[in-house]
Image (cartoon, rainbow, N blue to C red; front, side):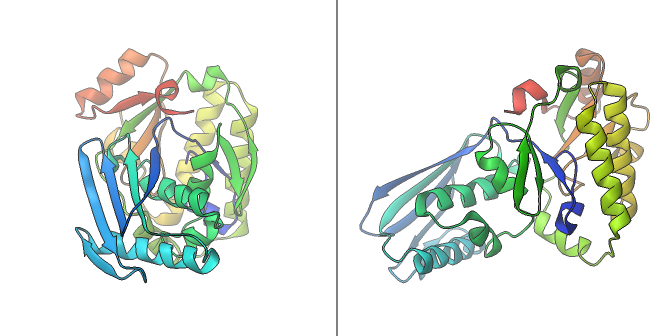
Length: 282
């Protein structure tokens, strides 16, 4: 999510990007209910269940219980489905990057079962749903209140100056959302963010776009009472630095004018996983 973190839960717009990385799900007939999830490094999760979705064996009880809830909702909605299958989920990215292993799982199960994706989201990971919307989007989206308002493309004068950098921490979005919901949010704050988004999507000038990034960063920082990332780690960087998602982990955005100069700056500070817009975004 580029714009709208947290405030999207209060009805603001958000701007979000579908990624070139993703996850696939294959389903094959089996005597038992078997689930296996793989990353680039091999199998990281497995579970087997009985016909009534009792967990028989697993290497991660917490994940298995989420899967169990999902299966039970699917069975209630689509009782004719045969769950005696071998489910195999494969992600082509590092899971600790926080690029959507949960949201793509929800989307895949919705596609397999025909059950509404929001219903599955609500019983599992929660949140605004922007990420499951991104799972099937073919271009950047403007999203609000459970709906994609439109797909769009940013001009090259903007995207050619955007670098996405892994901060090195996997953030727990569910816990951060719980903390955020204790805050009192005003309509003025929602309107302020929507204005920044509107201005960002109307411009093709990188300097104006950066002004809106900085405006959003200032607003969210004041709401969640967290120091801005640039102020904390990169005070001498010449251009915009913006937290993404739940703040404090996963990826952040840095704008630049010269790619190699920007890469040297962040690599010199130990941040070596970097993607240009063209490398990461659909």
